[in-house]
Amino acid sequence: MKVECPHGDRCPGCSYLGVDYAVQLEDKRKLVCAVLGAYPELRRIDVSGAEPAHPIQGYRTRVKWVIGPRGELGLYAGRDHAVVDTPQCRIAGALSLEIGSAVRAMLRDPNGAGRDISAIDIREVDGDGTTRALVTLVVDRRAPSAKLDVLARELQRRVPAISSVSVNRREDGAPQILGEDTRLLLGPPALTDTIGTVRVVASAGSFVQAHRGQAAYLESRLVRLADALTRESGHPPRVLELHAGAGAFGLALAKAGADVTSVESFGPAVTAMSDAARAMDVPVTAIHADAERFVASAEGNWDLVVVDPPRRGLSPALRAGIARLQPRAIAYVSCDPETFARDIAHLARLGFGAPEVTPVDMLPLTAHVEVVAFLRPIAVCAPRELARSESIVLIERSPHTPRGAGAPSGALPVLDLVEGASGIAAFRFPDAPNARTTIVARVRCVVSRIARHGGRIRVRGGRARYDRVRVVAGHSEVLLTLEVTEPTALAATLRRLASFGHPLLGDPATGDHAALRHAFDAYGIDRPLVHVEWLKVVASDGDVEAEAPLAADFEQVLQRLARS
Image (cartoon, rainbow, N blue to C red; front, side):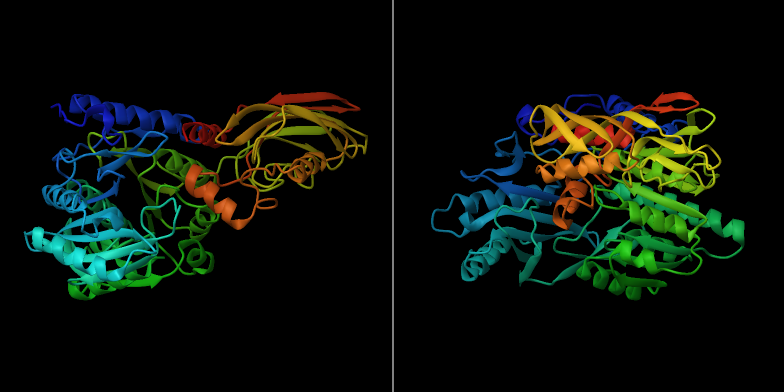
């Protein structure tokens, strides 16, 4: 089956128009295979065929459209952020298209308040077999409230299936379409929506899976996993759901007999989840908390941890915290295969592995693909030894590996790496003679802002040089060359670069919280971007050297920066 669209290549939303659906599914499976295959820890995972969607048109339960200067209503396209008008969008629901048509008409009214709107958010709900909508009008903070009230009433008059209208005020220049300040203008604050086998409470701006059929498929997979855990232990599983949203997965698991604790940082979603659990009379404890902070202090025995994070994925601390809980299984649902692969590679090093990953076509006709995997406890692989002499051992260091991991007991670092770095680590055996060593290394890193083409850096115990390899998204990929005798020379070199105005991206020692958060949200940078790619140690009992290919997550970040 092929789908055509009158908006064609002008709209950036659907990249598979005119392509047979079977080809789309196979392309998405291949994409997931390629992303996982970049990580040595994940190369043995089986990737099943992509789960097809039904239908592949008119399926979106939620749309967010921005408004252009001439009344266009659609998506941003190109670097100049021109808005492509999409009145005949093939993937938006019928009610969303009707609302879009009404908004366009109101935008053309020179006396109306439509010009105060910068975007709209439409959430379609189906609580009783009838499709209704929650509409959020996005405006700047200066828009007059009286005009917005009139606009909301006029919009509902034109489209009676709109149950409620809210207004969301966003800060000028904010990267997100929706700001944090939402106010109800008319209608009920929430509606009941059927997702799979459960009824959730939908409110303005709340998260929902884009495709009802695929959401029901994911629910069924989770319920089958919970049933398997029940058969293994003889009792219903105790489930911890993180990034719960409105709690659709947790409610379904509770309905199937599990004891569920759902954690969500967005307060209104927690309230909606609690209301839905009471209405269904199922055991869900809804907690308003940040997932990372909750897990850091969590105690008790959890059989299953369910995570469905935003596109940025899980933070390193949250991955480590989940592994510390030692559940019998982890269910990971993701809308971004790249951050998913980064996260489950780390979880594999923490003792949890997935035999299979299933791509799910949550957004047919687009390039996006959802993935789901069930991780179980596995043996933790020791770091790979690359080379050794009588006194020195070189070990391949994976991202987020703690300092000293994999080294012989009591061994001393010959080159003291930055916490979170990847590449080669060098250690001296504790019983080796205390002979002087010289370290020669090539280190790749990414620093903030555009650095000069190159130059020397003065460091204690040797010499260092940096050369700018390329500029990516306003930052600099840099190659450091070191010839030093001090183990702390690498950290000292990076500090010198930071003092020149070029701090290491992702490094908490030199970046502020806002910069680190932006790097994580926008590019998936969850560690200092430094990689020791070649290392040679000249010692009294002979030289030892090794190379390490660029870590997959580092390469992934470079690609994201280049795409931006």
